[in-house]
Length: 221
Image (cartoon, rainbow, N blue to C red; front, top):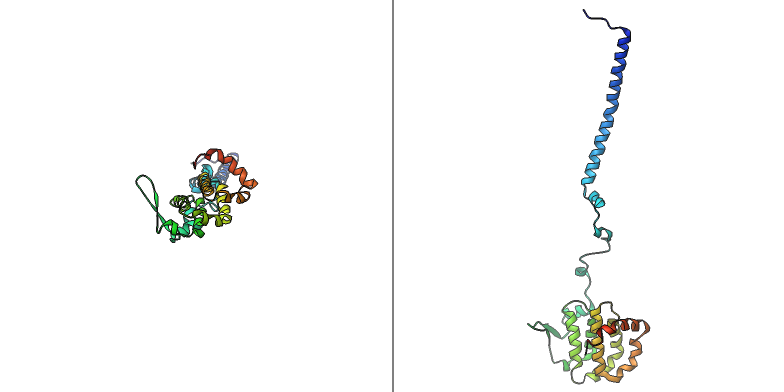
């Protein structure tokens, strides 16, 4: 025989049961939302983009749209390198065991200075091998041929701006080659160079040249 439960006890049991069911039903969406948030956070932490944000690399400060690590391969060739590659310079580099030398396709004294001497002077601004050696040594050897003064003096108005560009170049090795070429040219043409110094030693270029001269004052001697 079952005992009848008093109305007060029945109401209390219903109230407790209802509260429990309400808490259970209300906590279920919370647990679901918490689980979803944890899943999103774990997936975002594991993603490469979040890893970059948590641990940024120094290279991330650079703009990949404007900086191309392979730019030198796609850059258009310089005028001198293009002429050299097409055989426009009648000499080639010969690699020796001790030192390099130039091999001329024909005797240099038989070559016209115009435009070869100017082209070699333009090559002084190159920064890649073998163009650096070919331009420097070719300029020097061409000025040593018989009759060089008579051939070089008429070209001074066109040579000076090219040598000036080498002297004000930011690369120290380019400046060195330009300075040596100017010294070699002054020895060959003598006082004829004086009339062109005002174009070479302008205020801006003079400041740059003076700042570098002490380092290279004896380099061409």
